[in-house]
Length: 161
Length: 279
Image (tube, rainbow over all chains, first blue to last red; front, side, top):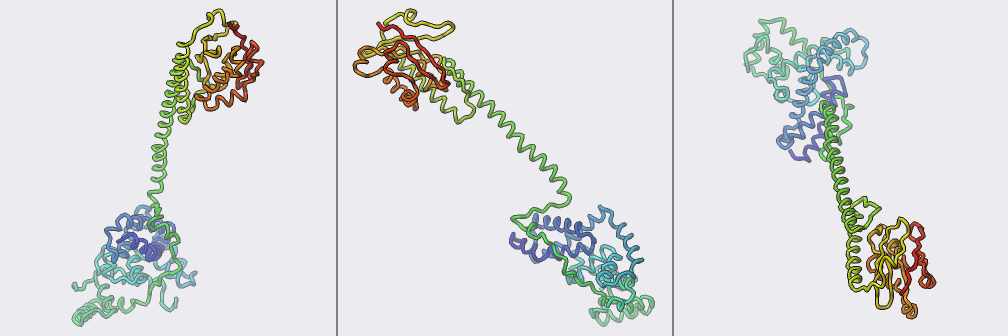
């Protein structure tokens, strides 16, 4: 991709990447840090990256960096603790977005990423598999499990509609 | 599609819900569910309606910083490293300047010392040390002028016919180390101090103030003063020489006639010269 395409890429995809990271990490600052890292990596290799595949490249880089960060910061344990707290406090929520957001925290990183890429970005299962470096079948399994967990958390779809 | 198992059945469920299974695959799934009634309940309870809607209010506000041209992306791990790097870089960049500055200073001092030495060799005292290269040229020029003067003086000295013995004509004050050279010109007798101890930083002044003028009877008649003649020569060599001579030197016809020539240097030091008796 050219320099110009890189800049267009910033305009077109930085919001998407940020949303993906924020929803995964629940930490805006951490998400922005990773976003900057991702675009830095892209810039360093932008001449080698196919412009048609740059969005997937960005999500893949974002996800990998995020996982590394989570592992590094040992946030996984914290997220699990948060899950317990969230479940206990579920009745306090009234806003559907908050409920879904908390429900999202029940998911594993892979489940969450799969679901976000599917619902937020509209990626196909195959594309998600390429981004997350898993098989298409595993993507489907993750998404199925994710929605299953979320429904269990919400209780009934009628509760949030 | 792979064979349906208890591990991969969710993938079949999704394809089934999305209508992507072939009839053969649907039949395989039905058979599988017959064998696993709990999983059939799982399928029935699955709610694909639970759909996450992207939160459009999340925007990255610093897009311009990510763009090329003004891209200053500072990854988290680089931030701390960059601080250290900046310190090292600053040290690397500044140190040579300090070093060079010292070298330049040393070099400059050497050059100045060399100039001073040259001047000393010619017995010229440069009290005002040149502090920068810009003035270097000036002092070199003065040195050149000094050589010209020396040549003139030597030429004049060769042609000069001493009228008196030095010891006889010069009255030295106690502690004064003034060596005067006497030579004769065709129309006048000029006594002037040789430039051996002239401060060339005040050349225009000192050169004149240390000059002793004794006009001759012939010049008085002609109205041409050796001093003026000399001043012209001074001007030739020193740009401001004549101007200074004309405007600053306190001399009159009387001074010339008078055995004592009174002049003033830049520091307003009055210099008295006792007239040398004309022969």
